[in-house]
Length: 275
Image (cartoon, rainbow, N blue to C red):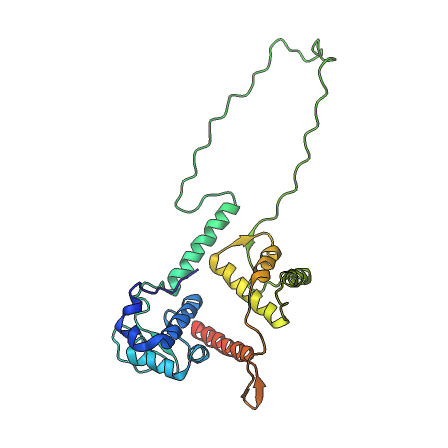
């Protein structure tokens, strides 16, 4: 999972001091978003407005922590109209999108090699231990007479039944969803623990967050229901409904605005990658 790098001297950096706490909070939160979605330091305008206010965005641009379209910083790339860029994102030690994808592919290939019984690329398989010589037949045993003590020999024991093979572990599917039994078990556990049950929207939000985390960590499992239950039982999602504000002649909740903003961002990212 990629991390957003914050220098240990950031708290006293002149730009941070001039930006004040509110704007620095926006800078940190958006930095986490940028690292998770592998945008290489580019900040979509929809996300900036969703996470912060216009004065906070202006403050980050004024002190030089962010750049907008038409900036003149020679070390940072150009910015599309309406979007922003985090100054010196790559120079601050943050990995690029290509580096993260390559690291994930190496981890996935290592898992595939391990499941196939092979070794990871670049590593030599240890030599097999020496095998003993096979037993030689007795030249005096003609095989037509049983040994003298055959009647006194104990009966042969039956071998124990073979265990059923365990299902193979694999990465979680991006569209994985919990079963109705999983959801019901979580609702009962939350009620017994004194926590409010999850709404349908909260179940969807918790599931999306769970799937993203498993994919980012490159984790594998034969089944995901039990892990999702443990995750959802302890999760404290943001309440759905939120503050209702007018948008386009209709009323939309805060969660609906966020989903609409994320959908617009996904279309822009897909359009940029195909170009």
